[in-house]
Image (cartoon, rainbow, N blue to C red; front, side, top):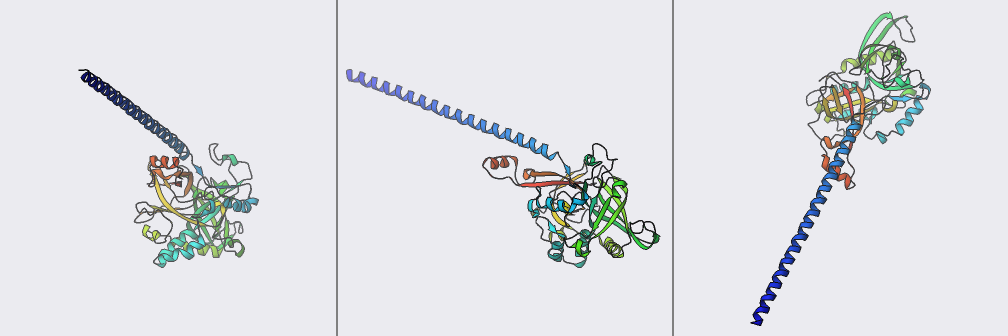
Amino acid sequence: MVVVVVVIVVVVVLVVIAVVVVIVVVVIVVVVVVIVVVVVVVIVVVVVVVIVVCSSSSSSKSSKSSHECEIFSSREHERAESHHNYKNCKKNPGHENFISAQDFEDNYLPRLQSDIQREKLRSRIDLTVRLRVGCTSSERPDDDDMAKFRGTDKSRLGTGFVYAVKAKYNKPCFCPNCNGQVARKQWSCTIWTANHVVYNTEEAKETKIDFFYNDNSCRRDGRMKSVSGMAVVKSEPDKDFCWMSSVTCDEDLGERIGELDWQCGELNRQDITELGLPLSGDNSCDLILIVSHPHGQPKKVTVGEVRCRDGVKGRLEYNTPTCPGSSGAPVFGYDRSQFFIWSPVHTGSFGKTSTENTHKLNEFQRVFKKMKGHKTEQEQINYCFVSF
């Protein structure tokens, strides 16, 4: 009887111990689960906060655009400051994706299938000009980006495109050399640029237009030709467009640009892809090719892709590299059939932004890569205005 009682007591004790152990294990499991849940919640909250902060920071940055004129202390210092600014550029250090006009002609144009295609694209490059503006008009409104330079000696540099050329015979020529005297033959040309580069006729008269500035030897051997602006014949401030007139009686220059003018025709996307230029490989994107004078240096060609079309604001955004000095440059857009017939002009830049909203990374991937120490891929977003 005593043995039975002892056995029963032992069994009861063991059962109690087992129950206690189970309860302890359950409590431990519950505590661990709670800790895990809390940690997960904290991580999610941190990630959400980081995303919100990054997104707001990105939106803040992307909403701030800037024009891309290169500003110099005076005309006397343009050459030295241009070289210095190009060498120390922060937006595109080294300018690896900028192809010189000569390199483009020697190594890229031959890849096109026909002489006609090569001449079409060569014409676009040759008709791109450098603009050196020597004054800032007092008529610029106070909220104008260049208004702070009113009354100073500062000059600025941009890019333009020869929109039209017309030969005239036995008419008064108002170039600086003729000063109203009758010239046997002269050529009037219209330069298309950005309105923030050349605001009005006062500024046009203080503008030097440099043709064929393709390399540093152009100045020495006379290949670069310069003429003066005359007047702003039309402007569309809301689209940042400006048409400036000029005239020359230099027969070599006049004949050459006159021949180039009619050669400007259509090129399609396939023609551009044949050049073997650096692209992302996304064939769904329209291409953007820009010819400009970054920092006032010899002509460069860059290519990229459309990133956004804002039909309400009439704004086209692209990642084609640009620099100060690119303002007013021709923007040639190529879709899968033909280029945009009315080429707009480059207006400005939003700087650099991560590519998470394009085709590279989504927001969570970007945050976690950043937390792990990986660099997020960046691309610049530049823009122009165009009618869709």
